[in-house]
Amino acid sequence: MNDRQAVATVNQRQLWVRALYMVVMAFAYHASGMVLFLVAIIQFVMTLVTNAPNVRLVAFGRSLGRYFQQIVSFLTFASDDVPFPFKDWPSGD
Image (cartoon, rainbow, N blue to C red; front, side, top):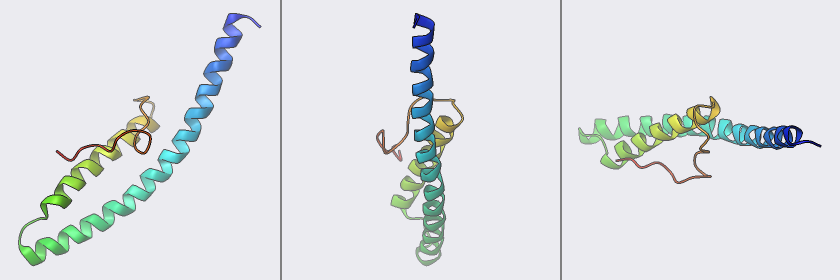
């Protein structure tokens, strides 16, 4: 086996590992969408009741948006960084 074949084999393995991560992240994206829906409903109701949005939910919404961005970047090969739970949760600041 020459060097080119060895590099190709390693790259193929890395691609299959990435494929597994992509499946996990696609499920995370779907689950996060359901969480977003619930947060939006809760935020709407709380704003109706208190006449102001909940600050903690605003921060969580921002961090959830950044999480969506990280997932999409990973799934479209724009980034090699695997998002949460393989990395820290993005901040809501």
